[in-house]
Image 1 (tube, rainbow, N blue to C red):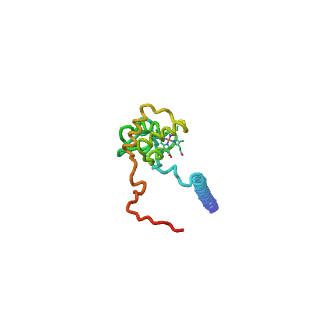
Image 2 (spheres, rainbow, N blue to C red):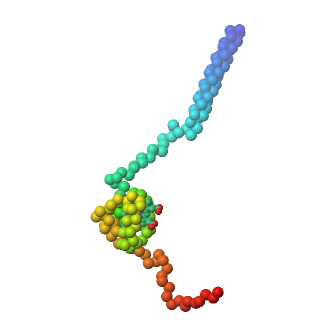
Length: 162
Ligand code: HEC
């Protein structure tokens, strides 16, 4: 009878011992998971489809730098036509191409504007390119008639009375 009781006690201890081990193991695993979750809350290490690092290609002079799309030189906005590259190379160094594009002038006024820049703004001697550039500008950006209102005709003038 006594032996039987001892045996039972032993078994009970063994059972208890096993449970303690099991519970400690669960707590340990939980603790590790908790620490991991604090370090990496989005669990990104387990996600397969990590966003691929984007490869950014920087346009080089050879390909995109002077790219022309739909007849427009993308970098400057100039219309593709004979003389465009000369204009790009000589007229966009100091100011935006917009300043050139929005100033619609005739040949005479272009000549004097260029002369003015040469005399006061250190614009270099354009040599033969001057004619090429002026031709390009006058052809592709002619003085627009819509820019200013038309000359009024048929006006009945009246005298201001004092
Ligand atoms: C060395 C520098 C330089 C270069 C190169 C240059 N410019 Fe200019 N340009 C200037 C400066 C500075 C101004 C005055 C800008 C301002 O008023 O803000 C100017 C002004 C202008 C203006 C405005 C003039 C006005 O009456 O308001 C036009 C148009 C112009 N440039 C066209 C050209 C063209 C076309 C070329 C190429 C042949 C050219 N520029 C090249 C320096 C330059």
